[in-house]
Image (cartoon, rainbow, N blue to C red; front, side):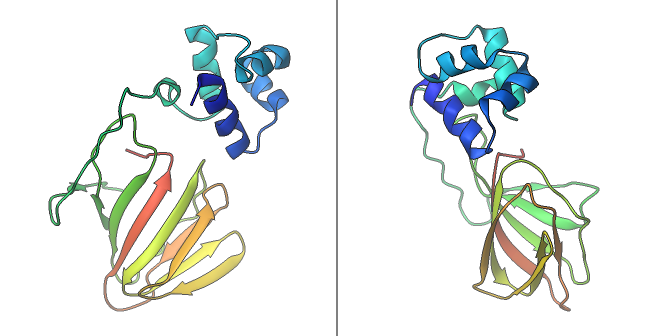
Length: 178
């Protein structure tokens, strides 16, 4: 995909107008339109401003020559320790700027309830074991093993494990967090 098409796709994914990106980036609407239509090539400085306005790193618009297949064997994922998170997070994929999705295996302890959170992107969660009480916006969902939910991360959302056993989730989100 060409640079202008990647910029337009990201802007549309975020439901942003050219005017909104113009205001955030300091670049004119006609110039942004020309870039999206491959009629102008942005400078590195302009591309960095566009990337900031679209909530991505500069490398988001520079794909690697060839995508790489990554295999993570059972038990071989990187366990991530976040002191502020009272649950276990295991990365199921390698790192690299060519990856758009963040797949994680998350183990939530009984009785845990997260604080409301919202950010750019989207999330998919699939319950492997236990129970999950998911709140997105003002809607509440009780999920059990085999249940899934997919929602925009821009909506305030919380998780809770109302059960007396660990809840294990497959979580996939964009953009990458790590």
